[in-house]
Length: 79
Image 1 (tube, one colour):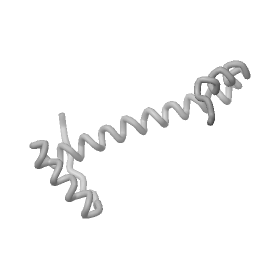
Image 2 (spheres, rainbow, N blue to C red):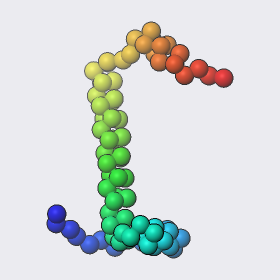
Image 3 (cartoon, one colour):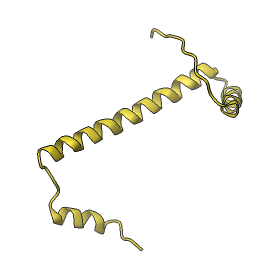
Image 4 (cartoon, rainbow, N blue to C red):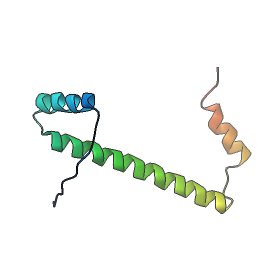
């Protein structure tokens, strides 16, 4: 896989935590940072896709029936 270098400013305490984790896991700080970025991007891409899908459904007026909404809320009782 081709790689590239970026420079990022982070708080000192995060850099220290990264260094400790790198030492404890025998991984490089670069590897850990790339892994963290990859997970962040995957999660946010999923969330954006789901939001876009929901907006498209709303534009098509594809809404849940009242019974479906009530059944969903019944699964999670409010105290």
